[in-house]
Length: 284
Ligand SMILES: [Ca+2]
Ligand SMILES: [Ca+2]
Image 1 (cartoon, rainbow, N blue to C red):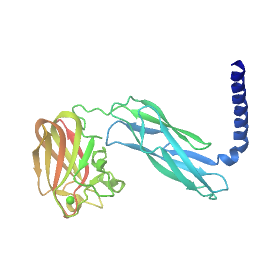
Image 2 (spheres, rainbow, N blue to C red; image 1 turned 45 degrees about the vertical axis):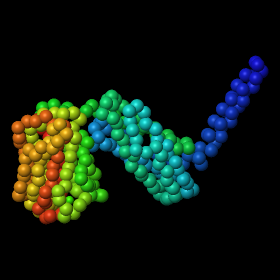
Image 3 (tube, rainbow, N blue to C red; image 1 turned 45 degrees about the horizontal axis):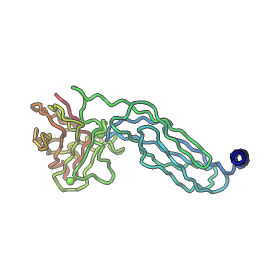
Image 4 (cartoon, helix red, strand yellow; image 1 turned 120 degrees about the vertical axis):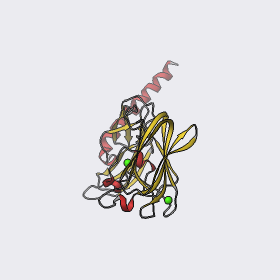
């Protein structure tokens, strides 16, 4: 019995030494991939329409073409949209970095703090810190729709349904997907909903339609639309906007307890699409 244990320990020790030596000797050839993250540190908040991401970079620093597998593992409450980035990395001169987007989310109840995403290839390692920020306040005076789950009757392939719930009201950034554009040209109505985490008192909705120097609301914005709130599972119309040519429309109405808000697009000024830059919901 004793002898057997001794043999096992000895074998482990020999393997360990051999492994370490082989790794060190072969490192320049085995480990030519350099990993990087942009940004180097990621911030994320636990709201469904405020996802975060980083670009994982893989750089072949050797003179031989190679194929790299980067494995990703997240700590704590962090959820990644992929666990593997594989890429063919030709031996460019000068070195060239291949990038892949990695989506980062956390659940609503994630505890604020810093968690690590670990990225490993055969020899290279990278740690990407992910800071979970506290949830934004959702009290009186705050935008109750910020970052909450948006859904729509359709969404144009170039757009993200979360665009009009991301807190960005700047039409000049339309081309960077800060808004929502429906996917059925010339066909109305279109609906855009934002569901709140819990029923709340709602008395004002700010509807921001596309209105930039290049795409003025009088030509590209929503002309006719209804504002609705969901009460006990049913939609109630609280404002009917007609003939609009402004970028921002304020709808105020008697406060009601609702758990979602809907914009019903009935016509746009040029007749093609419903376009929203942001939908904000307030108590008063
Ligand atoms: Ca927006
Ligand atoms: Ca449509």
